[in-house]
Structure formats: C-alpha cells, structure tokens
Image 1 (tube, helix red, strand yellow):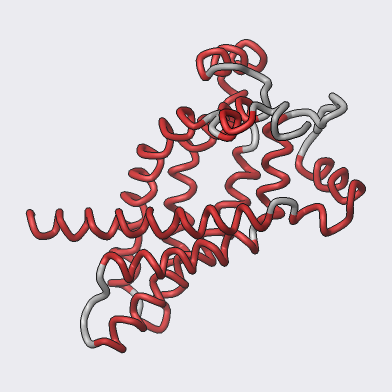
Image 2 (cartoon, helix red, strand yellow):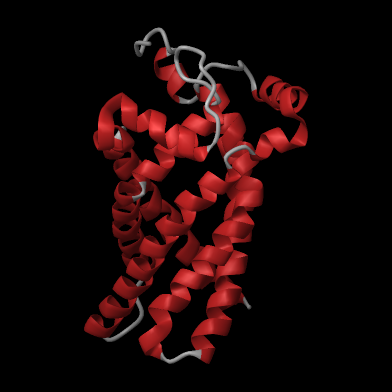
Amino acid sequence: MGFAQAGGFKGVYNGVFAAASGSAPGAALFFATYEAAKYKLTNHFSEDYHFACYMASSSCGEVAACWIRVPTENVKQKLQAGIYKSGREAWKGIKEARGYRGFYVGYVTTIMREIPFSFIQFPIYEGLKKKWSRWQGHDVSPLQSALCGSIGGGFSAATTTPFDVVKTRMMLGKDMHGVAYAGTLSTIQRIHREGGVKKFFSGVGPRTLWIGLGGCVFFGAYESCKEMLVDVL
C-alpha cells in the first residue's frame, strides 16, 4: 500500500490519540516503579553494582507500565493498519472479538522488547549522566540529561528492533494476505522465511530516529519536572 492510499499525512497520525491516552499514565507508572526500585537497590549495593540496579529497576518499571501500555498499543496498531477507523470502534471491535484478553495480545512479546530495551537504555542514560557530572564538577542540567537519554534511547531502539517487528506482527494478528499469526515462535519463523535476518530490522532507521528524538524530549521533560518538584517540596 502506497503513502497516498494509506491516508497520506493524515494517515501518519492514525492512532495518535490512543498512543497519547496511554503514554502519560504508562510513563507515570513506569517512573514511580523505577525510582522506588532504584532508590532501594542503589542504597543497598555499592556503586560498582549500580548498573545492575538500573537494569533491575527499569525491568520492574516496564512490567508495571505494560499493563497500561499494551492495551493502548493494541488499539494504536490496529488504527495505524487501517483495521478500524476510530479509537472507539477499535476498543469495541477488540472486546467483541476476544474479550478483555484481546487488549493484552502481545503482552509477553512487548515485555520481551521493553526489558532488553531498558536493560540497554537506562545504564547508558544513568552512566552518561554520572560521567558528565564528574567531568564538569556538578550535576547535569535537564538539557544535558535529555542528550544522554537521546543517545541511550537511539542505541537501544536500533538493537531491539527485531523484538518490535515480532510484537507488531502479533498485534496486527494477520499478514497482508489475511493469514493469521499463531504464537511468538511461529511469527519469528514466518518473518525469517520472508527475508532472513534482515527482515527483523525492517524500519530500524525510522525507529532509531524517532525514539532518539523522543528520548531527548522525554528525559528532558522528566528531569525538568523532577528538578522543579524537588525545589517545591
């Protein structure tokens, strides 16, 4: 399907409201869990093991956040694929087809994508902030934190693209010929038959770009809000 047939520039924003509705509560749940776990773990272990603390904390955050993120991701994917024309229609259609379980199709594969992503992203993000702070002799600014988040996010996005490809196929449910996907292993095998290892990196460029840019905005906003709340409280 070409760009114009898919809806042109209007089609680019299919699912934007579904994504936005899950983004704020999902991020809030992630960081509430992440910061609580990080506080406990980093106070318990020496600095030599802090990278592992960041990995464990981010994993806990992802497991929690995916309870919100996966349902909205399911709706968003189906809107972007043109299966439904509105968010309301998508929610109703998913519920009628598979009940509430339908909103959690791809939960395991999303976790399989998000945990490796965070395993890579947060040690890079926290590590770069520490090194930058030591080099300049004081804490990094929100802007500097944003750049650290952008680097960590972009690198993580590129390396975890195969997980994203598998997750997207499973959430869509069927291929372009209408043949349904049946389980994670079967989906992996089918993707490999289509184009080998290269097929698992479909869209790696755009994914790396938008997550890198998004990470810059996301972490910059997060650190700015955190700094403001610390000053107020």
